[in-house]
Length: 248
Image (cartoon, rainbow, N blue to C red; front, side):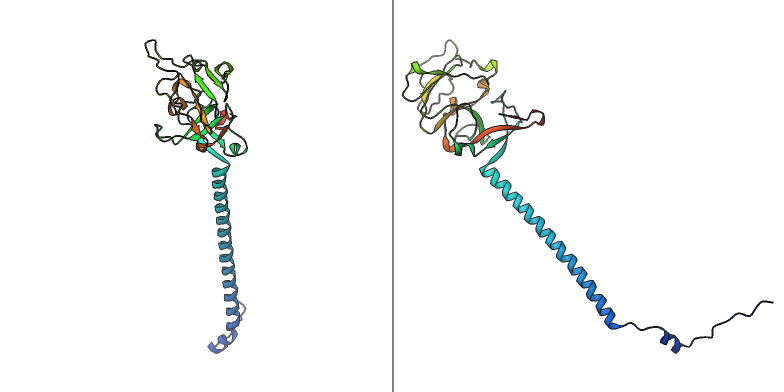
């Protein structure tokens, strides 16, 4: 025979209500205050983080713009006029500080704003500085370039050595045998389009620029010497393609 089971006596509704502890309103208010404080802390932290990143980004952009404007700028080579020194689609760095510290030197690779009226869509050009202010330059029909300084006569001319030229560019395309040669002196702008040979004296503050790819370059032979104020800076480093990074 099974043992009798202990059965708890029924609890009346009043007793049940007495056993259940009623919530303390002060505890609820305290919990809500802690939740609001935590949420407010998260919001303040997020806002500070966003503001800090915005400050970093704005500062970085400002520094980049200052560097581009006054120190360094990257350029892409659009044409073959400077081959084999630099090639189409190469990217180069230009030092804008160099010519604040010293004058343009013969042989420098110079980036400059092209003169008004020069054909083509490119705003800036890169050429090699060949003759300096006040010098007289003579480009012969065999490609040789003679230069003499202010006050020197033709007998004192320097034959320019150009080891950077490709063999095919050491001789320019000379006029044909039936081409009339009326003068070996270029016009007052030191330009004589379309005939290449000629001689002229550069004005002060002007530079005679030639492309290394002489037979495929529009340069000072056609649009004249470049004034100092048009010069942007000196190209000194090829940064692309990555396999051909080198100084210039």
